Image (cartoon, rainbow, N blue to C red):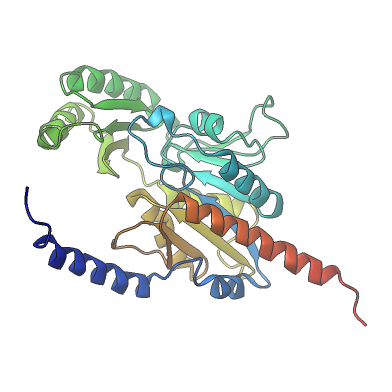
Length: 303
């Protein structure tokens, strides 16, 4: 067995890097007073990624359930603020996981946007599907990827309606590059699609100028908050590379708070950080408590 001492300098370097990173992207919990100050007098709109943000990252994507406590926290958020789930998942799947019809849902990386409904039985209203014409080619590529990757143990192809995900979290690391080459080989027959990478997942999407950032812009406009409105504070919380498109939009607007969920230092356009879904839930609870205190103060008669 190797002695543990040689790893200590490396661990210390990682810790130092993370400390420097958190000074640039401080905890949204530790800096909550600054968050509250930014939100004062503004209409807060909350955008939430799902996997790794509201639920833990798990080996089987079909088992990525959020806790009842997290669901209650998100329900309270939606009661006090306009709120949306923005995810790479298909809308139907994430709606079944979240179980809150009062939310907006932007699935398939924002390419399938639906509005809230009054109950779970009522169909949600489709607001926008900018990649609808790509459905036939996406389904063809899905079948081809299923066939091509079946020889790779642990590989899983997920059809998210307007995009595809090839998960390799359960694939032996030695097979990662060969798997990526298999995926690229399939996509040569489908020039209408493009390949990007997330957290141990390859994402296949239509080659259109649309992403989570565009979805956030669309939802803000749908809610009446155009670019020139200065009385709105969008808050976006996410953990994945694809969430960077939303963080960039908030920076470009010059308003809003991007919060990256991560336990390690990453290049990001987010302003703040949280370590894991547990901290996300704590932040959401505190945000609602802040709103309730503000509302209570506003209702208190002056003497």
